[in-house]
Amino acid sequence: MITHSHTMMTACAFVALIGTALSSAAALATPAVGFTAIQQWKGVYPALDINTSSDRKDNKDDKWDLKLMSKDVSDVYVTRNAIIPGGQSGWHTHPGPSLVTVTVGEVTVYDSEDPLCTPKVYRAGEGSLDLGGGHLHLIKNETAAPAETVAVQFLPTGSIRRIDAPKPNNCGF
Image (tube, rainbow, N blue to C red):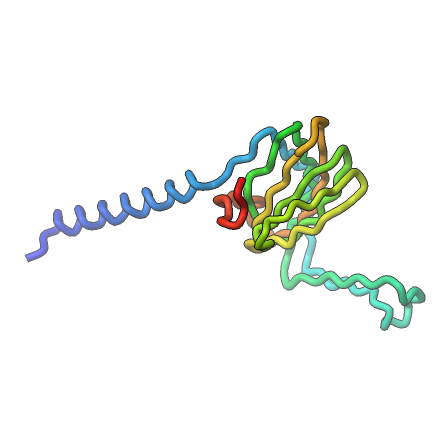
């Protein structure tokens, strides 16, 4: 016969097991070091349907197209990131894409989807695209000078901006 106290003990053990698993996953995340992110602005936009493609009658320039669509309300963030020499963002992802522009110095970006974890260097005035949606990346300042970036992020409304993650197996550092 199963008693109420036995059921409660089983439920408590299950909750403790889940709590341990979740705290272990958080402990595996790679924290940022020498990396400061400051949200500058946030705008809330209704569903987007932007199309400047050359097949539109009012577009006279057939050399440049842009299509941007969302099904629902989006939060658009502008965030300034400062990275000290040797600093790094920690492995992370975002729930949506980010356009990242280097404004000071240079940064090195590592992509978890690259089997060789090849470093890609971006200098002031250059930009990189972070796809988000589980796409893990790490931004490092491998120089002796400070670096800064500005990120414009398109995220589902109400979502968290950054999701920390453990180091992927293909990156040896």
